[in-house]
Length: 323
Image 1: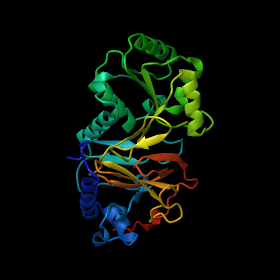
Image 2: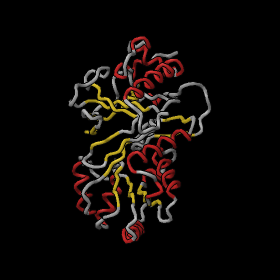
Image 3: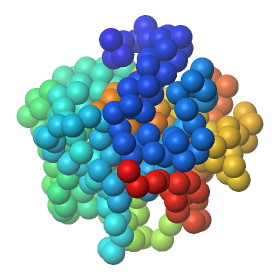
């Protein structure tokens, strides 16, 4: 089973190649892309040989493996006027399993945590996979003081103070601009609370580099580290950073860096490039995705996000051919 802490690199490569063959055969969008870039199954001998589908396809195509009726559809967030990605979900329980096991891998059982969610821009729209994830963690934890906070910063302040007095392990998870706003209005020392930002200014504040954001939050909350969550509507799994902006994936997820100038080639170790993601939990859609994010990886499998490509149209999108 992929959701196992003992999942080895050998197991990952074996299952990734098997899933590639399944998705090549049963996902017409992915197969057309692979054929467009000259990849045939016989050429795939290792993970690095597997082509990653540009994430832009989720905006214009129904990217599914097999024929089935979706249980739900996750949509990406974005600024007004942008086309949202759509991720059709066959098995919501599989998504929930991936979220729970991923959280347990980094943070232990959700039952140990009170979870406070400051996600106004996500709550204000439908189809957010992040909202589904947090809702699931709250349900599993079932802490009476867990809750959602839209714009009521005073109530959030009072709830944090109450949990801090109880010495309760607490996760304050929020979109970046809202955490910055809250921290400026109500700075307070957090000794038993992990602050986790999910990224995104959503046009509400001027853009800042990650280290500046974390430094400001660290000062306002008098905490040594700021954690981060890295996920997207097109995936089933999440990576987490427990500090310094360095992310780690669960065993069934891998990040590879592609050459910024040649998107079908891997970047040299230590060099920055586009972030490709293999998510074995994403078996009913496409497990092999080329994102619009820029980053670099380290020899231990961790990675850092440096930003986004200036031109979001990833090379290769025009290689989709009509069936």
